[in-house]
Amino acid sequence: MFQNVGKAAFKKDLTNTIKLLDHLGNPHHGMKFIHVAGTNGKGSVSSILAAVLTQSGYKTGLYTSPHLLDFTERIRVNGICIPEGDVIAFVNKTSSIIEQIQPSFFELTVALAFDYFKQQQVDIAVIEVGLGGRLDSTNVIQPELSVITSIGWDHMDMLGNTLEAIANEKAGIIKNEIPVVCSRTIDRNALEVIRQKALSENAPFHLSIESPKALRAALVLKGSYQIQNLDTVYAALVQLQKLGYNIFEDIVIHALGLVPQLSGLRGRWERLKSNPLIICDTGHNAEAVPYLMSQLELEHPKTQKHIIWGMVSDKDRGKILAMLPKEAKYYIVKPNVIRGYNAELLTDEMRGYDLQSNAYSDMQSALNDAQQNALKDSGVIFIGGSTFLVADALPHF
Image (cartoon, rainbow, N blue to C red; front, side, top):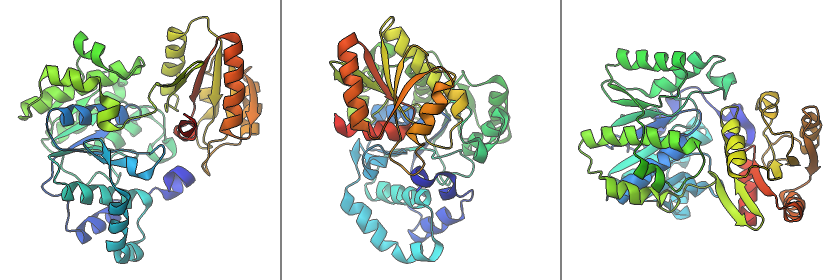
């Protein structure tokens, strides 16, 4: 599994996915999809789009990754997770082809998603790219609309070490004559790569649009970065309307207030407790961290910050640690996956950046100390640094 072992589980090739889907009778053929790629924001954008489509009366599939608490979170219909029995039935019926071609975790999960959406006869499915775009397992679909949320420095060992190279991989989801929506905040040179790809595919190219105040006020997902995501969603909804989808502003406003319930989205500036206040967020790379830290300061100025932090070993730690506020107190925990970075080693590295940090053996110990200290100094607790650390924290609430 990629979330355990990292890039060793990732295959830069669509052959296995195509073989698997062929074995299943190509369930994705004839289905309607929205395909969403991007370094940051693709999970939120996918979930908001799915919530709006569900609220608008469409039976909506949603495929996202990674999961936080349970594998079945990755595959939903109208916000409801795939039943475990359906996962087991799928593995049983594909056991011979699995043995034959040895698909990766991603390849198998994508095939399961398409097979389940076909069985459920969804009207449309929102598909979040797992990694990159061009060679991602999801890139076998013919979507109604392609969406690119952001281009940033992540997974450079697999996608390229320039923003233009990364943009080229993300732009691989653009299909012939299929409209594409891009965030207008994308770096100019990276955006030009995407624009040129759209031009070569004769795909209508659209930038995100400033969303109306009523929509911004209605969005239940907090965090300044969600406004950027909402602008991308708004531009996508305009294109869906043009394609004949019945999407009306009053229904959109209602859906924006119910995104977690309608899509199952969690861990995006989520408030876990009020006394002391505990917030978590899955943002974990050099693009996301500054947004999160500025949001924390904006909402809680002159308040002591207690930050429970952990990282995986394949991130650019130095770049990220340099962005963290020096006046905060840090409680370091290793995320509970094989890729999780040792808490003692991370603590040592953080001290080199003048960050007050202590290592903990488990989440419960870190939470106990952070809550005790936050109650004493009326502080706020933030949990982040890794999707997997947030996943470790959620069962405690």
